[in-house]
View (cartoon, rainbow, N blue to C red):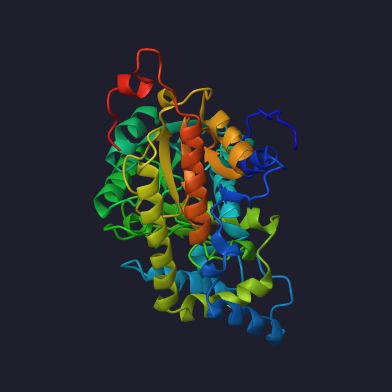
Length: 424
């Protein structure tokens, strides 16, 4: 780790990428390391979860009611609490029977894909997207077909592309809203168009809404399950992001299907069968969920949103000051900004991975290379860190980019002078 040799393998997941970049830290740099790589702000005091959640855990422990194994799919009070919580955003009431508790949102995605997979099947995934979902599809022998999200239009789904790549073997399309890594928040009209497209193609929609309600712009959060009367929707979620408790491992898989199509096709029965052989979230956490979901005040949510919105403003403004980094528009949700590298303005850097490796080595700063989430020569930057770390990290990023900027040639011009101006 203390040598000047860069390790240059290409990691295949976000966790692998962050660990890989840490291995390239310079041990001689005594500044604190800063990571903009993960979407986990829970380690910072300013993002501590609500006392309501902490008290709920203590009460669950002291009650001695939640020391046993939980039934498949979760204990009834917890499933009912999740159904009631999600129904606040809907014109219809979800039933506890629609809810399956999982060991975080990742397991919800894994179970969903296992249940839907079939020989010769394919699944439509967004690019950029969340790489773990792609891994689950590969493990279940599904062909992956990717549709682009359009940065110049707020990272909306390219619905023409969805229609072009779908066929009779397509099992589902996946959307992530609010967007990871894009920071997009889809409007009612766009989600309605997604639902209509999916119905036309005869596929269901898997909606990853783990960042639900974490929005900062003019677009409110609209759940995809609002359109379940048009097309069946499987909603994936968790308490991890909105409550800042990813380590508690409580997620859910919810079948939003007023028409009963998923039950008719025995999808619900298959989910139950698969969950029998899967690890489940600790009964203790399940016991605390009703109080957490029902009693958390709006003050806690508002405080979190205000901190994140302030951080986003700083991040956006500072990134726009760096010539080699292009940010098409301000993120509106989740924890991330996707920015494009203009490699023509940099010397001795060939791609996003080399950029991030050298950044880790020279500045003890981790930023996720875009190739990890499906977009080569882009970067994913998280703003969900404490303010002092955000300011310090963005300063290091700017210094690094200045150090590697192309220098003046003998003609007195730089590569920057010779490029068409790119609008930030």
